[in-house]
Image (cartoon, rainbow, N blue to C red; front, side, top):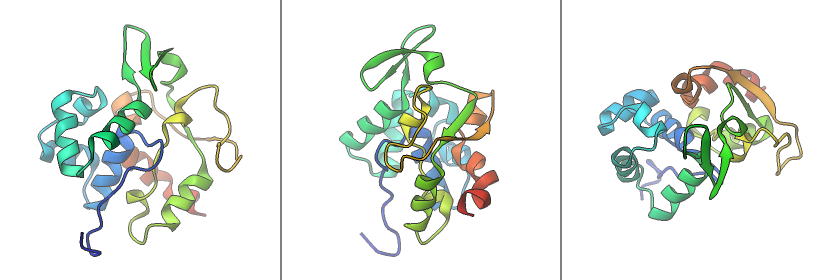
Length: 171
């Protein structure tokens, strides 16, 4: 593949909305707009609609294994108040919170490793969603609240949310 247009790869433990947001940022567009260009709504990706995932896989040139890992670290609806995450069923509130947390050191390292737009590099990790996880497994840095949003579609528009706080993260 050309060095001018390197293929975007999922980061270890990355979520589906994070990957779509990074893919959109790498193309200079907003994630919901890229989703529409691919033929599905952003919300259909969040609900893990099969057709939306198939199209993302094609556009992102994802292997079956890469897509499966993204899905497993995202979590999927498994009942009225339950979520399937990494092969285990959790109460939805253990994973779905209006307060999105993350490790600023991981995000800084992501941005430093990518020569272009930091939003095309900074990836949200799935294990950060777990309410009981309070520290970064890699850096031993406390997870910090990054933003709060009650609307799940707005909350999971990672590109927009990180775009609002990219400068403080990088500083």
